[in-house]
Image (tube, rainbow, N blue to C red):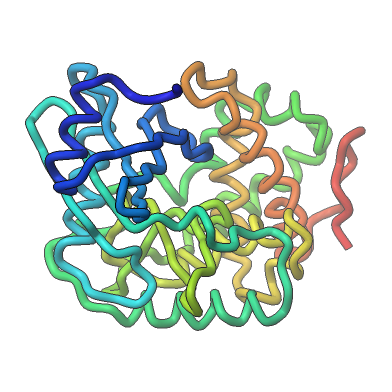
Length: 301
């Protein structure tokens, strides 16, 4: 039977006060955290997320950050918190089981509207003590500058030529710096389809380790290319008249998608490239840039 080590099994049994009968790996996510859907002898189930138990793992802090949100905020867009334990080595977060919910794509207009309504509720929610968004990613608006300093990884993607990049950077760099992250909204900072679930008439958002205080438009800007890459509308349909966000988000992916694969998260670069192929044409349209001219250039119309 596929199951975690006996220590984790016993800790979950003690926390839930009942005996697990079936352990099933929950696939997804881009971190090395352990993820399990656990069934119990009484017919109930739960989702277990635990750190790796490795010293100085960032997963420990990320799980503590998630627990901070779940423990202090009551909102319809949050999964229910069932249990938490932090032994200082391998924190465990236990949430309601959402494996029977609907995880997009595909998208429909109704589902898109439901997520937009959820994001409006999210940004209006109040939760004190979170870090400002600019502290989580200090260079968030400056990534086209990173590309300018080392263009080879980006150019290796085949989306554009070097002359195109040299023409576009003087417009992309200052536009991205105009994206304002400051604000008092609750910001998730990682809105993507794999973090969105439709269950029991609710739209739920998971993975809260990057929660911050800032401008809620950041979540719209982050979600828009992801949505479009999965068959949704153009990004500007989600966040219109926002060339600064188009430049900022495309720069975030442009400086990462061409880098070497991450050993313990091999799917990340593929996802970043997929979103770049939607975000970069958004920036082209929003800033009136020349048509992309690389051999693998996406359509910009």
